[in-house]
Length: 81
Image (tube, rainbow, N blue to C red; front, top):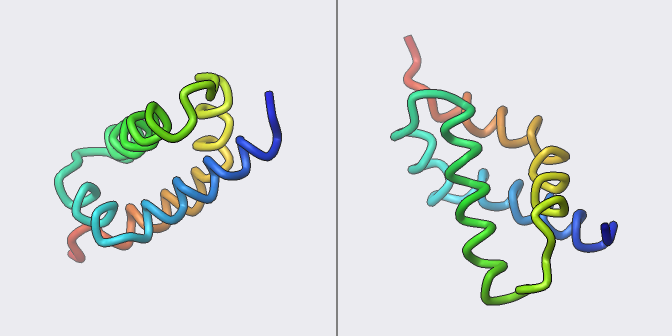
């Protein structure tokens, strides 16, 4: 794995989670796991064009490193109650 690619994926996942698009995704998901799948899929699709040589393991590692930030963003979008 390439650490620079993993770090770039982590940064992308964190940025997407904080972005209005990521927040909108969070509002429509029934669980954090479902939310993480949607974020991962969006990153995977983007990398298909930008970095077609990216390995699945690099995507998994980058998203895994971003989990705590993504969880915080997800929980901030949950209805207060």
